Image 1 (cartoon, rainbow, N blue to C red):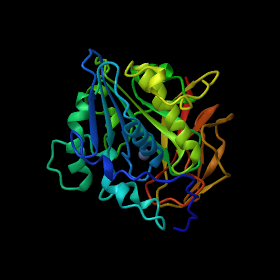
Image 2 (image 1 turned 90 degrees about the horizontal axis):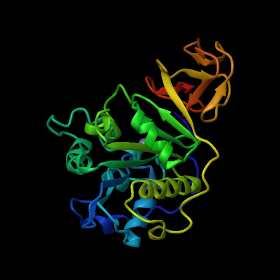
Image 3 (image 1 turned 180 degrees about the vertical axis):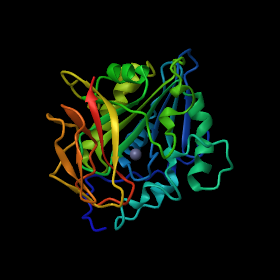
Image 4 (image 1 turned 90 degrees about the vertical axis):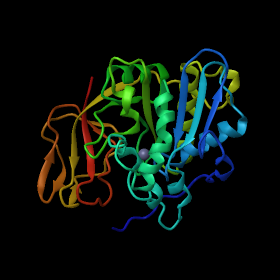
Length: 314
Ligand SMILES: [Zn+2]
C-alpha cells in the first residue's frame, strides 16, 4: 500500500508527566459536591492526538469539577508512545484495536489493549457521562457517533456541535467503549458520545476537540464557562442533522475503485448511483438522498475494511 502521509500540523504533547494518577495515565478529581461522574477519554486510538492535546491542556490547567467527579484518561498510552513519524498510522494500536475489546473483557487479557482495557474499565463503569475523543484517518468532516439509542442522539443535540450526529450500531468486529455496559442500556440514564474531530493531525481537529469537550463539560454541569479557556467553545452551528447508518460497505479483497473523490457526509440524490466498483462489482446507493458517512474510498484499503457507511437523514 502506498500512500503519502498527511502533514502533522501541531506538536504532540509529552504525556509522561501524567503517568501517576488513580491508575497510570488516569486522573480522578472529586469536587466533594453531589453531581455526576464525567469522563473525558483521549487516545482510545494511540495516533488520534487532538484528544490528547485537549486532555493534556485540562490537566495542565488544573481543571477541577464544580460538582460530582471528573475523570481524565489517556487510554492507549502505550500505542501513543510507539509513534514513529515515518509510519504515523501504525501507532493506532499495539496488538489490537482497544475500541473493539469491550465485549470480551471477562476473558483473560492477552494483549496490550485488553490489559489496558481492564485497567480503564472501572473508571468507565463509574462514569455517568463519557466523551471519547477520536479523529480520522481521512481528511473528513467532523461527526459525533451517538450510538444506536435515542439517548445518545439526545445528548449529542444538547452538546450542540458538530453538525453531523451519526446514529449507528457500532462494529461487528467488537464492542466499542462508548457502547459498553449501561451506555448501551436504553433504560439507564448513563450516556456516552464519541467525537471524530477530523483528520488526526490537522490543527482544525484540535479546535473541534476543544469545542466539543468544552460543550460536553458544560452540558454535564461538571464545570462553569469561566473554568475553561475562553477560546475553546466555538459558535454553534445553525442546525445539527441526524444520520441513521443503514449499511456498512466493506471491500472484499481490497480492490475498491471509487467512482470519484468523496467528502464526508455528502448526500447522493438518486438511488442506484454508482459509488465505485469492488472487484468490478458496482456498488450503488440503495435509496434516494443517501448520506456517505466517513468515506475512506479515496485511498487503498486492506481486504475487509469499511469503504463507506450509508445512512439516511432522520
Ligand atoms: Zn478512533
